[in-house]
Image (cartoon, rainbow, N blue to C red; front, side, top):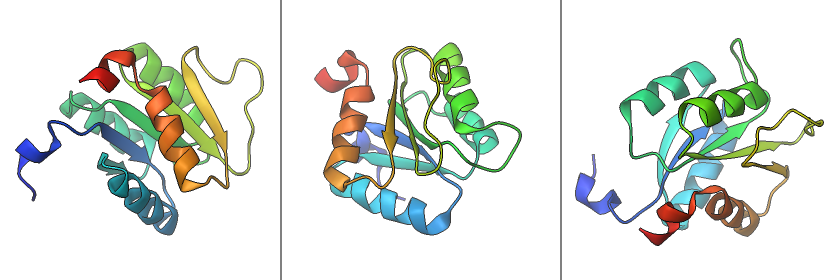
Length: 132
């Protein structure tokens, strides 16, 4: 494990993606962009991490994932329980309908260029996080 001191100046992203190859690709993109990445394969695992990790700045979640809730519902629950955490929802299959995304949540349609993903994550973070 890398020393915790290294992450102090890096935004922490909680990546929620069930498809391993997609998740590994996104982790590489985010680490190359100087994000610290914490991974979860579904909403249940992600909630556990949110409860344990107060340093998470932004959540990146897919819409379709295993478990009892999808990415839209997960985004709503994150916004309610962790209002200071930014949320970016992505999907290649489903576009949000009116009311699917809570206020302050961002959405990108897959496929996503790496630069667009990084920029969208920065926009999704709350302003105090960007200044830190």
